[in-house]
Length: 113
Image (tube, rainbow, N blue to C red; front, side, top):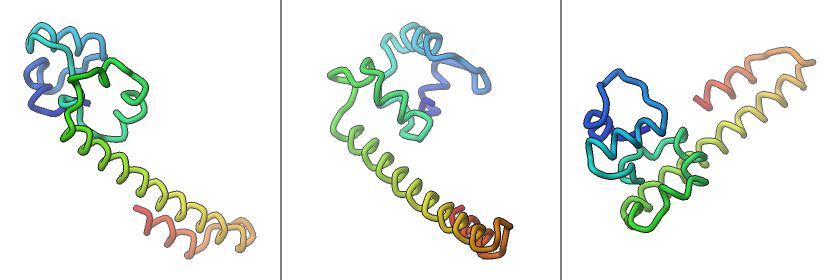
């Protein structure tokens, strides 16, 4: 997922592009490849871009961009931990209720949202 301003320079607002096509369009319209600064630091991008070394090449990530991504990843990890704890609490409540849904389980999961 790219920042809106970058996307609108390479594609129509509602257009869908695969990554190779987006990179090709960036090279054509921007005169360069996509960099970390172009990517939104959201969970969708985390796993893919952590192993895709093209984006981590020198010059693609300034200290400011790295700090932005680090903060987003830290937040996602905290959010996941909270959701996992809520799911575990709900599972325990269901088990204690003979395997049936109960108000305590529902409340645990609603709190996680």
